[in-house]
Image (cartoon, rainbow over all chains, first blue to last red; front, side, top):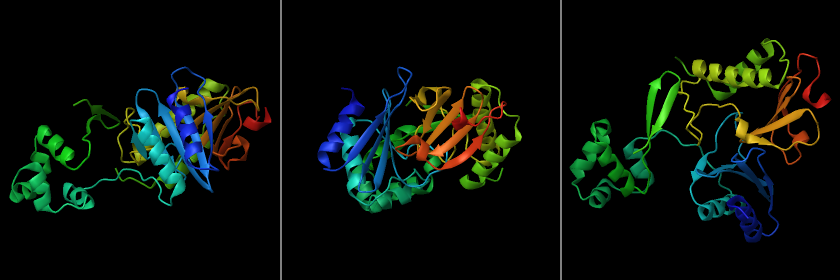
Length: 166
Length: 124
């Protein structure tokens, strides 16, 4: 049994009445799809073997969009799928926010955040107002303190961009 | 470049696909779909093409060859998936895009175009 098949079984066991079906790719190494449903709620999971699980709830979406959330581990994916099927929340696409907005969403005051980073409140204020002047190592530390992950994208032309390995 | 909303970009995609000559085979249809969507997004989305991205970044991406799945209901039709959609492409070049549904033939049709022989995907 592979990971997506294990997720299917776990979801069906966790929610009595939930149904889940697997779309197996024709090409070896292709993406597996799991479609789970429970009481009119639908969640799709796309599994890419070396990248993790792309999760999307049933909100209307445009043709060609990617999954809203990506999780690395199967356990986290099961938990999230069950949460989405059993509750009323939907997955949401990532949005652009400032560091200050991200801190506020984590319900941290500037002074709390400063304590986590072992810096002064003035230093946090400086970070929030001049983020682009920060070193990558500082950004990595800041994201860890927020329980987040940092990704850096390199835009090489008008139509090409890559995620940098840090 | 001024970005326009997704719904308008999709309408532009359908318009451009309809304006193209009907594809003669799978390869032509596949190329038309991928190239046209990339062109629309390059011109109108305001978002750089990032093939390594996976989580949605606001840009619309064409289906990939490693996202093909079984479809036994029509012998000469291949089925692909993107999140929330089934994409059917016939060996005769016909294209059909539907919302995903447990029964693939029940999903609402968003776009459909016959191959160069005049036959639609589900007419094969």
